[in-house]
Amino acid sequence: MSKNYAMKAEKRERAGKGIARSLRRAGRSPAVIYGDNKEPVKISMSENEINVEYNKGRMFTSLCELEVDGKQNLVLARDVQLHPVTDVVEHVDFLRVNKKTKIAVDVPVKFINEDKCPSIDGKGTLNVTRYTVELLCSAINIPDVLEVSVEGKNHGDAVKVSDANMPEGSSPVITDRDFTIATLIAPKTAEQEEAEAAAEAEAGDGIVSDEEVAAEAEEPKPEE
Image (cartoon, rainbow, N blue to C red):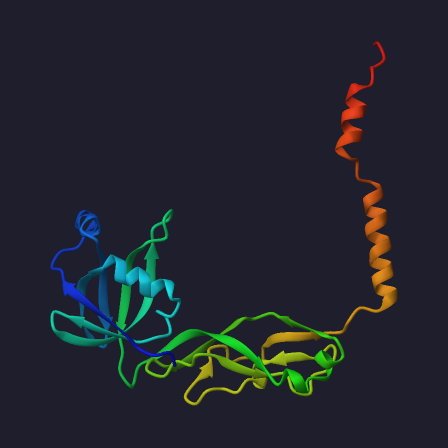
């Protein structure tokens, strides 16, 4: 799991659009902490600091040690609202977590054992259909990546979730099927490449160039 990051926040007693605008004018972003069978806590954070963390791309998979008025909270960002034009963070929802907290999170896929894949060795192409897989895992042990092996795969084979090295304590959210993550595509034959080139050339014969359109427009039209 990615290393935790730390931030500081201040409690805010009031909510609403007017309060939010006032906070943003002061360089603060409104946020809320919820979950763990406790009352939600409204907070505000440094707009600059929260945007720096968000742009690192790890907020949804890394725990935040969030200090609120001197009290430590272990939280995970679950939703971020952005300004529609500037993409500046306007609001964050943080979930309180502990050892028992289970969450669903999209984990990036990393393909391994490509040097042991006959298809790739035979100039085949790995066609990825899922770049992430949604896993149910412990909130304090979110995997950085899901390693998926392509060892022994030949042209036309599918790479399934069952080929993944599932991290301990994690499981796919989709449980009713062994879904496909990628497929191995055989290289094109010379005949296929020639046929495609011929089809493209034939399609190109019907294209009218800008010069031809202009010349046609300049031709005198017969009198009616």
